[in-house]
Image (cartoon, rainbow, N blue to C red; front, side, top):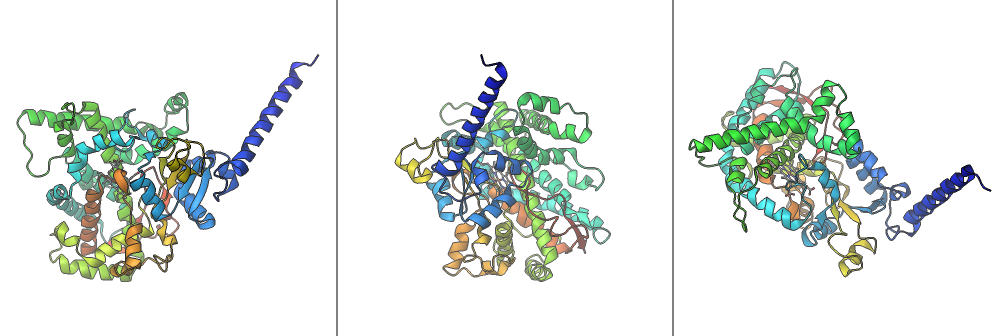
Length: 506
Ligand code: HEM
């Protein structure tokens, strides 16, 4: 009679053969096996997950496109595209739902505009906050933005010429201050208190939250709970970032409610939290629940700060590296902003050709949010349907598709020469290159899930950029190099750098 050991060995061997057959099927017989890509990526989702965990997804995907072309298989059921027409098809025409990866970014277990997967619930949620980011409302908000920006300039003036400054840290603080003002109507006062040796815990928590979402996703709940107990100060603040942010949001909301009871009225531009508290849902006419209001406010805070600060930092770095471009931009801004402490209105800034060309080139050359925006095909079209076959050639209904944006610098016909940072190309709008460039310009996404804060983000890039360029000359600090400014996918939201030292000269 056979003993247990050979039986166990046989079971393990059978399991091994079974897994090997599955792997071979994935590589050679899977319906997606005709799509080019590294064979090891098609074995399991762990390959892409590993690079995501190391915050290297953007670079790895960029290399995949360079090697395999505009459509790449990067997992058993994952396809990545770098094709403007395919992106339009998925995001605008088909409107495929977001993939489940977005669920990792729930706040305190609750959904918000960014994490809701199905289009109908998303549309209902977005209706409440939409008007806050209309062009008209941003125009009302601009005088407050000017005030905050002049505080930033004052802070920079106190340092200018003496030492290089990590503008990344300062700009995150500045953008957190703007976002808190827009969302809660509260003045954080963090820019005024900013110093190199005392990090601001609140701004740190905003940066930490999306990264924590990625890291947390890799552990079962109980393992994460154990990890949270590790007694290290920085680790503790990392794992408790959502608690700190939630307490802040609850305190601001309560404050506002008390002020409203005392008869406070808002004139031109009420904060987002006020709009959400006043909002009544179309069918039920019920107000939004308190938790929903707080969650949405926090989501907008987290969505807006890192993205905008990292983008502006990259702009400053480009100016520091390209004295000619800096001089040209300075000349244009000087002529529009005669007094160095009076920032022109957005309507004027939006019409400065070189300034806008510079911003477009910056967004295309170093897309602020290069991460894959996964969409799920299976949930939208039943397996076997015409649409399903068209998109999945045919494959299981759980197929995920991820589209890369902004990598059109690798499309030399649209952006010749693609490796040169050249704002001038945007000054020529003639066909066909001008039209092709406009088609590829989608740093804020496209379709119904396009960035809701786009108008605010654009203002929050233009205003401080203009104020800094008008008041200072920008030089690269010694510790910042091309390598240190290599793009990383820092979080679900944005490109990320560790620091960016620049020297500002009055
Ligand atoms: C340079 C700055 C910014 C960039 C490049 C950017 C980019 C994006 C992109 C590409 C998306 C779509 C994400 C996806 O489909 O996965 C998005 C979504 C979103 N963004 Fe932004 N964003 C920026 C700033 C802001 C700001 C300032 C706010 C608000 C204060 C904001 C709020 C949001 C929200 C709430 C969503 C989710 C929209 C939805 O699904 O309804 N973003 N952003």
